[in-house]
Length: 294
Image 1 (cartoon, rainbow, N blue to C red):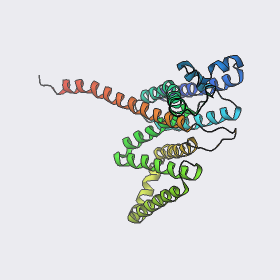
Image 2 (image 1 turned 90 degrees about the vertical axis):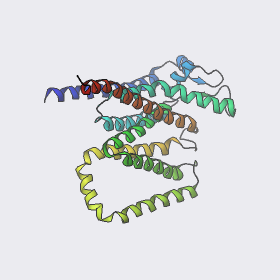
Image 3 (image 1 turned 30 degrees about the vertical axis):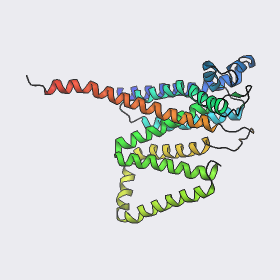
Image 4 (image 1 turned 180 degrees about the vertical axis):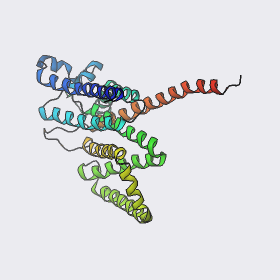
């Protein structure tokens, strides 16, 4: 094994260890945190604090609640890591991860509190909130933007737009069947649009299909994490926006999930823009120096 491969393996192991540490914290807190501290860490709508907005994110009210958060965290982050391994600048990915971890908990609680308590007065002062799903939603937004960035960089702007649009349409179609957010009639319309678009695409490009098939097979290593990532985002969105009671008899926090997903998207976009501007600013002086006349 070469020195470069060894360094890459070491870096991968370190990244896996860091991401796994989040799971370790969640599990440790759930099973070993004293009850007295647990009650202090909860976010209470009658006494909201910035600190409790963060600490409540690592609390879960049942093993099934914890298992759901951990499972989706592992799935989403594994997809994001596999997708971004080809990025030349991995720093942007890690900055986005840190940004989601830091900003998603207070943002989800702030919007939740402002809408549910201040605007609509739907919750009592004693109502509490907890759970890591808001942060997982933010990582879902990170994955969505990462998909757009990766596809656009590899296959062009049109492919990036088509990918992000397909994810949105797929998620809406799934929600129409799995959630009361969208009515069944909307599901029929969306699925008809999808089927019609696919049918037109197949008919109009029928002579090119063998060529596309050969191209897709030759690009399978690069396309696989993209396809997996798209499926993960669609399924995740279909689960985040449920308005029915879950297995514990509790409503899923649709507002917090939507806020978390939007936060993850915004954080990732800002990181990528900052990284691009910084890269351009460092390249310009060197280019001017090289082309300037003596």
